Image 1: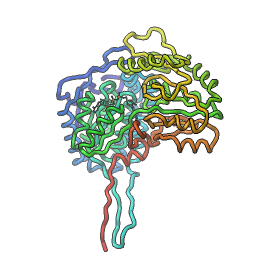
Image 2: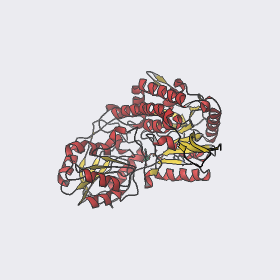
Image 3: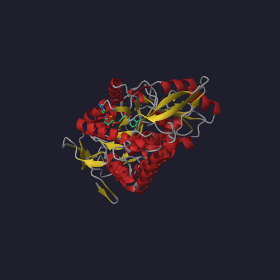
Image 4: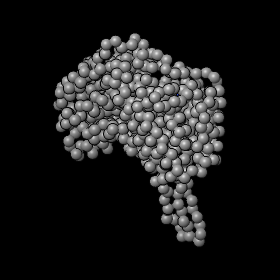
Length: 484
Ligand code: NAD
């Protein structure tokens, strides 16, 4: 693909530091969700491509990459971060065309990608073991070592952010990585391969095999030489990957979906809360694992909050990604059909407000208007299931106890927030909520590269982001020396 300052072959796989034709000779069409036009034909990787990438990764571990010091790995990541920063606009443009997200959101993702490589570049030589007091005559210490070859299977909704966090941490710890990007959005993943080559990563440290989930993805998850699997995506595929990993007794990190609540008490500062309440639901057209699709609100302020959110919804605009308005299209016709089915099944609910489509949108774009529903019982499908679209429900509650019960009453547990000025209540509620992250008087904390992230229940297990990810992407060896 040719943009002003970034060239790479979108139809190839990236293995052992080189761009290669896929073994199958087959390709998968990538479509621009804003207008239905073909933007690229990406490689359809198969088991032989996975095999050659595993061999390349194993060789890298025996060669210069395996022998690199933590500080050398850190410097490579920092160089990669700088190259991302130089190409921010190119990367943002590519992501918008590929994923359909408004340009400003893509730019934020590119900034986060650079920040992940910077954070893990800086962290690489700061992970230490410990010495452990033991019996007389012994010195005992621990070593943090890479797993070896790691597999990274990522979705289409935030390719840059997710690749940044998963590859950044794995590379910092010295693993040799194989990335399987999504067949629905793959172009920035390939660009990262080219930038890694330019940054000087040794051959085989990073390998990228695009293709179908049921082929390249499954082959990667089944390969016995892959010693750790990091997966971000749907619950169903997460379960399949954990099942495959069990056969090889391989640890997995699963970042799955969510039905994340924001709890708004009667003393909340609504002026501050309002943009967070709405943006967390409609960002990336609601196709965000940590989207806040449930707004729980005290009955005492329900009318005011519902009216204010409805007013914001009325002014939301849906348009092509490059128009850079509040919402772009959703990723595919299939995803649009799923969302519209939920909306059809919500006829029994009170629709409070709906956004607008801009004039002249291409017929083949996958546009869905954002919708807000009020007075929704938490047992309703729309309050229980992850829609992955721009749909939010408002659920009223009587008191703190009921708010906590409702917040915890889904199978997910990824992110939550509590809006109140009462400090004791903030602490009580944050403790009582079953969730990987809880925010107090904010939501999402601006991406939070430094903040451990992951779920409980059907939201998955294991943590990425922050230092915690470095523990997940390494294994601990205890050395007990007897010297008398
Ligand atoms: P998906 O599960 O369909 O696909 C994700 C990736 O898995 C893709 O690369 C796909 O090719 C691959 N895949 C599909 N079947 C596979 C198989 N059998 N074996 C191995 N790999 C396979 O998910 P999606 O539709 O791309 O993304 C949407 C889902 O991802 C949503 O449910 C969302 O909540 C979740 N998600 C979670 C997070 C998080 O951090 N928790 C972030 C983004 C998305």
